[in-house]
Amino acid sequence: MSKALSGVRILDFTHVQSGPTCTQLLAWLGADVIKVERPGEGDATRGQLRDIPGVDSLYFTMLNHNKRSVTLNTKKPKGKQVLESLIKQCDVLVENFAPGAMERMGLSWEHIHKLNPKMIVASVKGFGPGRYEDCKVYENVAQCAGGAASTTGFEDGPPVVSGAQIGDSGTGLHLALGILAALYQRTHSGRGQKVLAPMQDAVLNLCRVKLRDQQRLERTGSLHEYPQYPDGKFGEAVPRAGNASGGGQPGWILRCKGWETDPNAYIYFITQAAVWPAVCKVIGEEGWITDEAYATPQARLLHLKPIFARIEQWTMTKTKFEAMEILNEFDIPCGPILSMKEIAEDPWLRKSGTVVEVEHPTRGKHLTVGNPIKLSDSPTEVLRAPLLGEHTDEVLRELGYSAEDLELLRAEGAI
Ligand code: CAO
Image 1 (cartoon, helix red, strand yellow):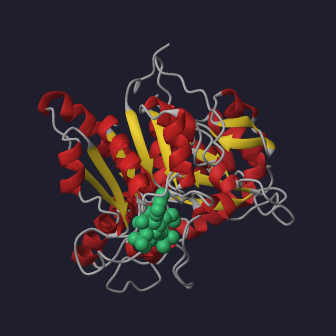
Image 2: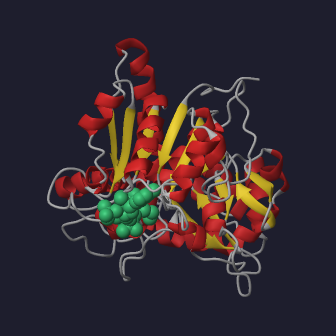
């Protein structure tokens, strides 16, 4: 069966996390992704956070599925020539080097555009144009500069970064979307273009509800669904909201049976207005259905802390899974706090192909996260990440290099 991006060739000049998540998605959608790495060492993540000595790390293997690996020293004249023949034959170049690195390699947009006017050049950078545009950026820097950290955590604690890699993987997703749009536009225009996804901008996009709240705060002086209301004080900027819901339906994380020993015996509970009577019935507070202090969403905002404390008395009598079952019978929106262990063992995520076991030649079996985007006509088969330079000869032969050429390139350290 052909895939959504069959026939699209990606020159994957990415490393670490943000760029590789983008090209991995494109590979899952069917593109031929050729990852270009430095001879000898490759993507730095191959050696980072290793759990088995001498074996490509999970950090690398879980971000580079379905790709081919070519080793190429692009700073050697012959290596650059190979790169330029790849540029001529690929549709998209994706890179996430530090600002200026591409230009230092002699690969300005103008040069690439001249070599291949149809090529789309897609970049992740930490910041867009402005005071920080020359800065190197990693995940947590982006979370901080994009507004996520200042709005995450509890009101009496410091800013907190999240486990979700919204700076890297979040930006990779944005970049992939930009690439797909540029590929589509090229079908009409015949031209390539530059695609830029700055990490700060991507994080801010994911935090847009907090910029919404900033403007509400400036207009009204308070945010009624935040834990600071009604007793605490608001300052000039959106405060950290703990576990409050970012939407119009109040929610909180509540303890469940076993919380004393299990750090994840919790449930997220949303007191959606539409099911308020059901919430009251489940917890045995039928009086709250008509009591003026609780009957309307507006009235409840004044009492969220005691309301959640009362609901928690109920959730503490159930495990998170028992509570889920009961609450779902009444369509009360809630969700168990799942540990990574529970997710790794979840049979439904395995069945859907979102958690996949992959065989790797040097590490054996390992678990990975498969493609979270499901296309009915373009199913994803998750293939293991390539070994360093595994496909150098294969790809160069496709470009027209002979066995003798390969020997010469190898002798010069270009590949
Ligand atoms: N052959 C020869 N040289 C190569 C090469 C190859 N195949 N691949 C890379 N290089 C060179 C680059 O040309 C660059 O050389 P110069 O410094 O001389 O220009 C050098 O390798 C290092 O590149 P870098 O500066 O991008 O790498 P770094 O480890 O110092 O920085 C990072 C890493 C991530 C901070 C930086 O790349 C960056 O800010 N990227 C943009 C933002 C981003 O994507 N961040 C997410 C990272 S994941 O948290």
